[in-house]
Amino acid sequence: MRNLFHQLIYAVALTLLFLVSQTAAQQPATGRQRPPRLTTDDVRPATEQPVTDSKDSGKPETPEKADESAKVDGSNPKVDQTKPSNPKGSPEEVAWRESVARARDKAKRLQKATEEAELRITSLRNDLGVSGQSARERNDTAAEIGQAGHRLTELQSEARTAADDAEQLIEYGKKKGFNEAEEQKATSEDGRPNEEYYRNQFAKLNEDLEGAQRRVQLFDNRVRDLNQQISLNSGGTDKRGRGTGGDSFYAMQLQKDRDAAQKQLEEARTAQVKAQADLDALRDAARRAGVPPGILR
Image (tube, rainbow, N blue to C red; front, side):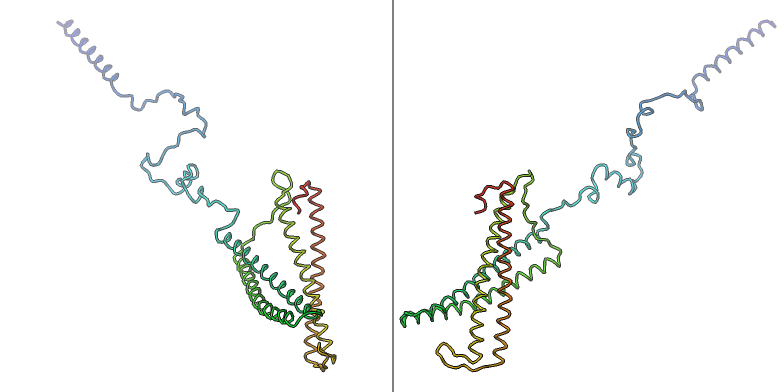
């Protein structure tokens, strides 16, 4: 009986031990550390590590992170979408350059027309002194002088207005900080002589030379005419042989005008010499650069 009781207790103990071991095997391994493992992320370089998006994590993106992301993807217009520079200038500056070019051309044309009109009047006056003309021819010449004189007055007024307009445009551009178009270069980008440059320079210097020659003749005529008026006012005789008597105030004004004309004549002669020298230098430079001779014609 005692042996049977001991066997029963032993069987119950074995059963309890079995149940405890099974339960322990089925419990989760909470608090137990797994052995470390290396993954591809562990050996990837820092620059290739995946970036956690704050949007995915549910946290708002900070301005600093927004700026950094904008630098990467170019979505920030303040950083990436800069205004392209225009080497030709703003539309207003380009329009200003065109206006200045037109204004200068108009002023130059009117000044030339004014000078030619004055030279024409001088030529007509000289024709009146030519002997052998009929009364009708003299009358026609006198009438033409009157018309030319009226036209000269109009041209002088128009030339002054055109010159003032050009000057106002130039001053406006200076206040705005505008720059006129750069001049052409003698050499093109490929290192060859720029034929367009030499052609334009040749035309400009020829125009300068012709203008200087015209002004030399113009002011020389003025000096001659004023000298004659001074002589007549000093007590000489007029063209009809009548005595004129002297007028000190008028004589002073004539002397002043003659001195001004003499100064302008000297300036015109200097400009003529310079224009001729510049033209010769351009021809020499073109020859040395290998520019075809036909360009400078």
